[in-house]
Length: 184
Figure 1 (cartoon, one colour):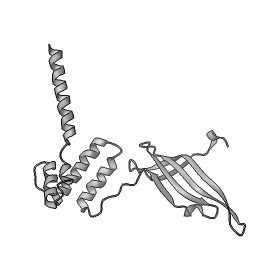
Figure 2 (figure 1 turned 30 degrees about the horizontal axis):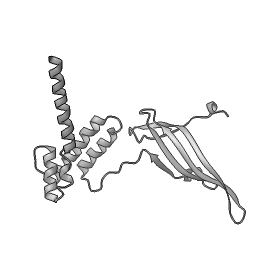
Figure 3 (figure 1 turned 180 degrees about the vertical axis):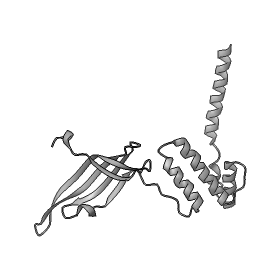
Figure 4 (figure 1 turned 90 degrees about the vertical axis):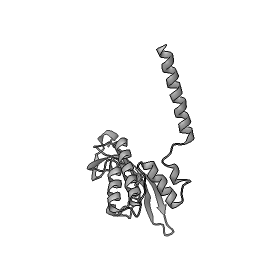
């Protein structure tokens, strides 16, 4: 059977990218096979297999690996997802924050802006849960850092580095000078 005549394979499951339950298509498959012989001269084949599946909704790719041997039944093969890496939900999140965190993960690969907004909401909820005070998020983070005694790392989160400020000032002065010369 030629490459173009290969039978297409499909599998229904949740896409790890867009989180929709869809019928994924296997677009690539490769098995590294070794011929094995034991001390009793019994022979078998075994190896590592790799599959690439594509989502029809978001066109995201999932790469899976598995170990295969002649004596293993197909239904007993254990698959491991290599890509995308599985996002782990932090332990100890209250139920309402966990729900928001999962919502953010669902849009992570679809819309970066929506993901940023939702993750900000998760951080705000976590600050609220820990009793942080302040009007703005960076103030709440600094308050938490002061309460926990972690001002060296956590407190720096809500503040841009001096390098970023220097770049902004340079850009701003360049833009002002450019506007002055163009108006002359």
